[in-house]
Length: 97
Image (cartoon, rainbow, N blue to C red; front, side, top):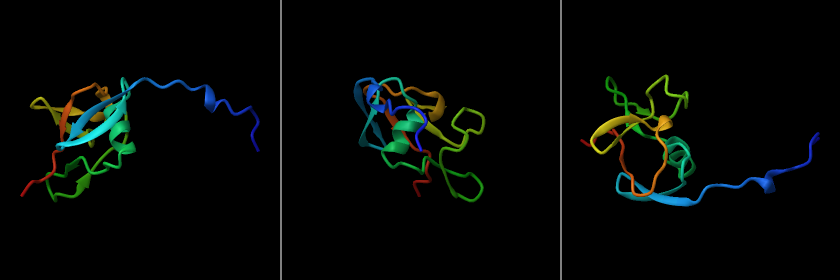
């Protein structure tokens, strides 16, 4: 049962921009979090756990857990606190061995 009218058609999204994740092109809406864009594109495995190399990805989505860290321009950043921008080159922290 819907108590309010469906207003989903009124949502206006920002323009789509492209960036890369581990060298593959990904599209996201300008200004949304990198985590959201990566999840929507199907990238769930963002890094490996340091102790047992278990796959890690988004967990809290608000910058408390650091499970979603990735590398951008040589710096390790939380993807949930980083905004999508055109031309970003994002690298996972997966074990490359």
